[in-house]
Length: 190
Image (cartoon, rainbow, N blue to C red):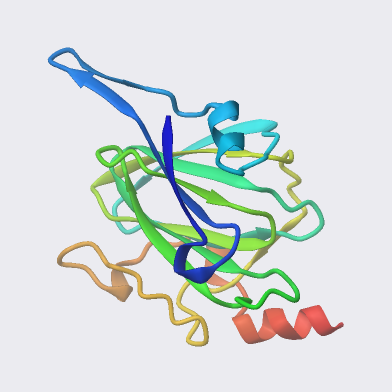
């Protein structure tokens, strides 16, 4: 059983999923994915690969997207907490360029369904976090694009971990040189 909040921030296709958790003095049990439950809630996806990453506080991964092999993603946190963001990059979408963010944690057990053609990223809010996700296409190393996490035009309201700020963010070399949203828009005209 799952509870689904669809069209987050008015952005069609995004969904926050809360699984039913069965707990007692021993711990808890939950289904992290059930195709029948997803389809009963109008979420039809064929996942082909599972991925997992570990990151420390203030690591920001993103904003990433796939160019020729877009992926639907079902993301969750299995240890710690992150602020997870999706930006609508779908051509012709009435919410193109809008973003939505949600806190995902091992404690709240929420999952975030992000359809194809969204930029995606997350900021680690806890000391460490393990992030797990399912995707609907295989990884293609030469098919990655990126947009700057702090792009002024997107104006994402990142909730920095307590006692930190923008100068404390830890980025990969690749993410340091991601393009602006304006540059992305220009590349789409070519």
